[in-house]
Amino acid sequence: MSSKLSESVTIQESPALVFELTQDYSQRLAWDTFLKKAELIDAPAADVGVKAWCVSKHGLGMETEYVSFKPPKVTAITQSKRSMLFKKFSGSWVFEERDERTTHVVFTYSYLLNFPFNLVTKFIHNILTKNVRQRLKDLKSYVEQRGQAVKYATIE
Image (cartoon, rainbow, N blue to C red):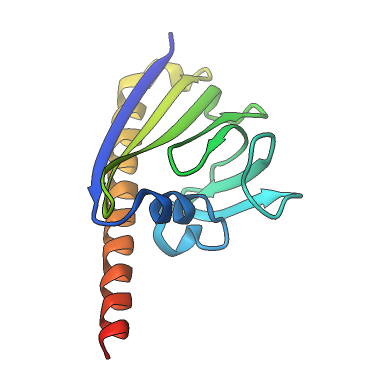
């Protein structure tokens, strides 16, 4: 049986900037503390059909492929090669404009675990939820602190 989780955060910055930052792999590790490696495979930028390789801080890696890329609104990936943990996996980012300087970000995972991990689905779901919440918290902190730094640099 497939599982799904969805978490969200509101960030004081424009959807275009938040979208761009989250999909720029040269900046990914600056804010995404869950990952220790994030790179696109044979492509200069994210887009439909582009594959990415990401490795968690726990050492688990996964290759994904972009199936949707509509700046600054939505992007989605699906697992392109089976991983140790997931039999199937997909994820999406949705960026909802609240006003020109406020973005509500919704991060969703849908997944099916491989055996024997499927025997502890609830436990893994709780870990994934905690990790997604932390990633969104880190994103918010990074973007908003970066915005403050730009404001102060502009004032001086």
